[in-house]
Image 1 (spheres, rainbow, N blue to C red):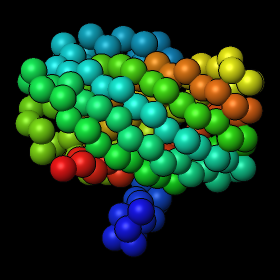
Image 2 (cartoon, rainbow, N blue to C red; image 1 turned 180 degrees about the horizontal axis):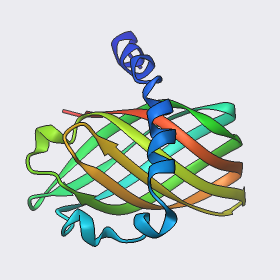
Image 3 (tube, rainbow, N blue to C red; image 1 turned 180 degrees about the vertical axis):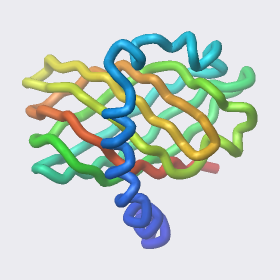
Length: 158
């Protein structure tokens, strides 16, 4: 990872506090109703390794399917909440993406989930300043309990 990329991640660490407010602002019922987000405009597949002990760190990548094409990206982030280590494989819908350039950048992530060995699951909500929302269902492997918020930086791979 480059120093520039890590610097961007650290700059958005403070955004994790805002993400905790994001969690509190929406009830579980509101999060379960994607109709207010409009129709999905794309799909995303994410693979991430994460480690947490009060604070958390994660690194990974994935594929965005948008406008009939596939785009690869990498992600990294820091946050608060949880303990353990896990590998996450998540899939879900993309909302509010109007152009590819809006996908890249800083995201606030609200997450909850668990992992015990090869069993585990979770839910992730990510939102960026352009109004792009990722609603993901996750499968986790490892030993972890997560409930918290992260600041994540997404960069397209060229």
